[in-house]
Amino acid sequence: MKRLFYNIDNNKVYVFNSSHTEYFHNHKDTLNKGFDYYLRGLIANDTLYLRVFYPYNDIDNLTYNELIKKSLDLLTMFKNNVMLLLAQQGIKITDIKLNVDNVDLKNCLHLLNV
Image 1 (cartoon, rainbow, N blue to C red):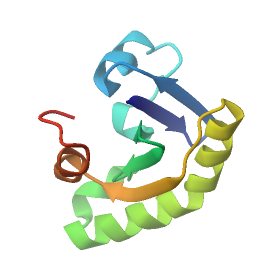
Image 2: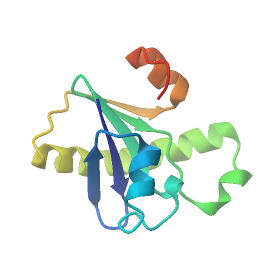
Image 3: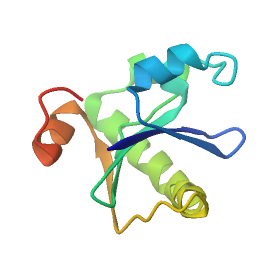
């Protein structure tokens, strides 16, 4: 399983094998915004799982349903860029799941921790 960060500002994707937290901590010079600013995903069995994503400061003012809707809109807007960048790195994706959270990932991938 691989993980990724996608920077919406410069259209760069970073693919790695460590946890998101570990990678973020070790690459603060490159990833110089807050952790939640970056679109995060996992790749397993040729499927791309993009996590719920909302990088803006007004997140505390949103209901859960508003957050999920805005996240889906953002993920829909950026998914083709991510897919193209992954393809350029030779990563084959045959399916994509949007707006996944920890529970979804644990169930889909049969993991104890995500």
